[in-house]
Amino acid sequence: MHIDILSAVPRLLDSWFNESILQRAQQKGLAEVQVHDLRDWSTDKHRRLDDYPFGGGAGMVMTIEPIHRAITELRSKREVDEVIYMSPDGEMLGQGLANQLSLKGNLIILCGHYKGVDERVREHLITREVSIGDYVLSGGELAAAVLSDAVIRLLPGVLGDETSALSDSFQDGLVAPPDYTRPAEYQGWKIPDVLLSGHQANIDAWRHQQAVERTRLRRPELLDRSERDPGATDR
Image (cartoon, rainbow, N blue to C red; front, side, top):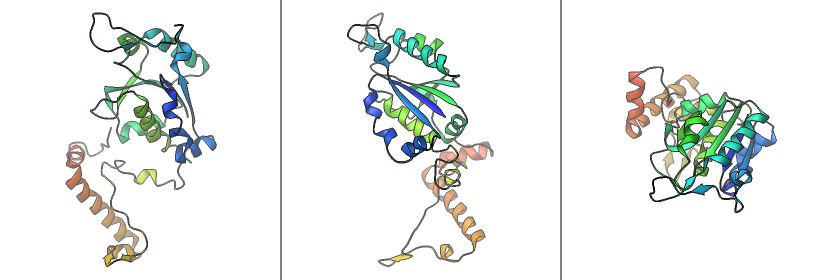
């Protein structure tokens, strides 16, 4: 998978892709992430990317020209599956969407900044808009990093245990059950006996029950969604 990220402040993303799982995914050749400075496509002598909005109002807006040039150049290098704009009013990121995007080959992610982008960018250049939550950030960089992380970790070979991503929260419409590790007893706090039984079917049944109960207590809307559509995950 190849991901191009277009940003007004690309250095914000330096550490995110150079540590831990995302770094290893790139070292293995399973993913390639390139963070681009949108100012490289600006023709303004001060490398500006923003201007005042027509009609007045507070805030500045990212102009269309450098964004159009950047996307056009990147599209000329490879076939792009999606051009994604990180926006608070976009499609909500869930595990189902992460699963869908992990099957793509090439993505471009545009990070908004200032008050947002010229609406013509969204009308003519963007194929998908994604939000990571009902709140506003100073820019789309953190959101782009979250989306990239959620997608890249699903690629075959990225995680050490191939089954670990499949057992993550939300993959089956439930949150994950509790996990325990050694020692089996600490300061009088014991782990559930079933986990020491060696009976895998009983352990699996206990984990499923715990996942259902934890979901019912903490995220009941997920159960409501599953009951309405038994085949649904977090789309």
